[in-house]
Amino acid sequence: MLRADAGPLVTGVAASKVARGAANVAKGALMFRQYSQYARLTLVNGSIGLVTAPEGRPMSVMGVTVVDGRITGVYILSDPERLERLDLATPAGA
Image (cartoon, rainbow, N blue to C red; front, side):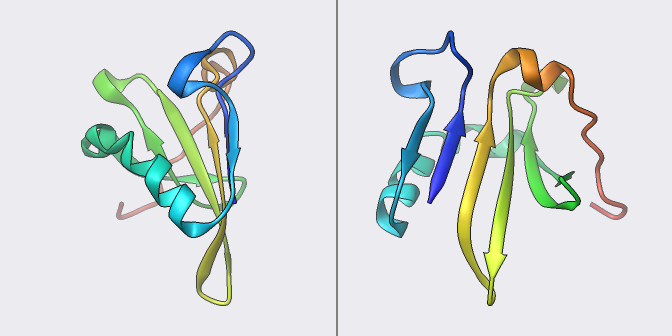
């Protein structure tokens, strides 16, 4: 399952949504692949995640849930107001 929280003011393709099933999640992820060059490892609630920051400004942060070696959940936050309040740490060696 993927949950994307873009905040209350975002509409269109980037609006908040929920996707279920590996194929649907992968299809949705492909829509944003052009930003992969800006993705860096970070800690999200103490677990591994990604922050995407074109020009050094966070555009989104993604956390994943892993169970038995498989990704079972993805949570993406792209709400600009909430992103400004985050302390995004980069793991050592990343």
